[in-house]
Image 1 (cartoon, rainbow, N blue to C red):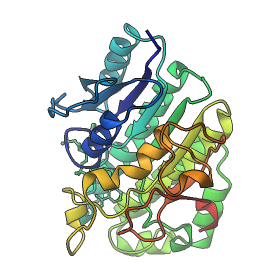
Image 2 (tube, rainbow, N blue to C red):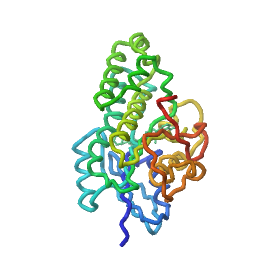
Image 3 (cartoon, rainbow, N blue to C red):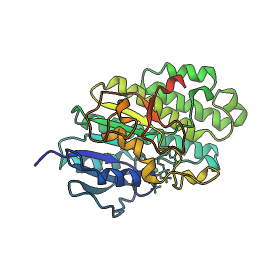
Image 4 (cartoon, helix red, strand yellow):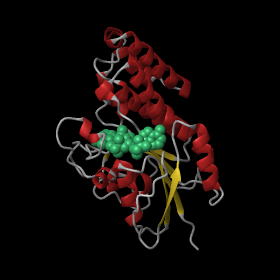
Length: 295
Ligand SMILES: NC(=O)c1ccc[n+]([C@@H]2O[C@H](COP(=O)([O-])OP(=O)(O)OC[C@H]3O[C@@H](n4cnc5c(N)ncnc54)[C@H](OP(=O)(O)O)[C@@H]3O)[C@@H](O)[C@H]2O)c1
């Protein structure tokens, strides 16, 4: 039997994560896919896979290293390594921001995604198609931060540098709005955006440190999910439309040839450390590569 491509996706019980599993499950690529659809509850969402692909449901809480290890060991009993990891799970507490919720958002989104990357990296297959996809947010230009913070993001050399940025933001947020603004973090609810900026910085760093794996991140656009409804108005994209860019980064052509239709299943140029999004958050296209540190 042909080797399957082993793909792990987080936060798949609803929203964009469920859309990612639906879109992947339908593909009939040269290699069959084994898709591990994980969530805190381990829910089976009843998605139908094409005849070549298999979906397996698993329990996984990205904030809990024991939960991640136990899931990982169960996969490694069946496969020698993981080919693709899609870190989709996240919370947004912006609508009820307090220092406590800010801390929960940073620990869950950045801390959880970091846990996943650190524990999965030694178990990634490192074949030419081995990839990590981190789902972030496009509403997150570096230019929205003070010059000193921008400089610190550009100067990141280690994970500890990124941890320190997160702690510095939380320290300022605890002191209140004036301290947060004076510290260069911007005003109002910022924890969701900061959590995603930290993941963007981590994506660039891990891509440099692991040249044999393609590690990229993307914004799904404005999607009709619980989180999408936190913004005013009606989110225009379905979860499957929101899944297009993450799925392209997982199994598609990352070169400009994939900009039009994702180039799913086609061989890709080796592109890593990039942020992909569409020109507009309502666009259903397959994403374009951008350099976040220049935004
Ligand atoms: N929707 C948009 O317009 C939009 C825009 C930009 C970026 N995004 C990004 O797209 C991704 C998916 O968002 P969404 O819109 O689908 O949000 P959503 O509807 O709120 O779903 C979030 C998912 O993440 C899971 N999750 C949260 N914390 C977790 C944890 N510790 N361990 C495991 N799973 C966890 C949730 O599981 P539970 O059900 O257990 O809570 C849920 O499955 C996120 O990274 C988000 O930041 C979304």
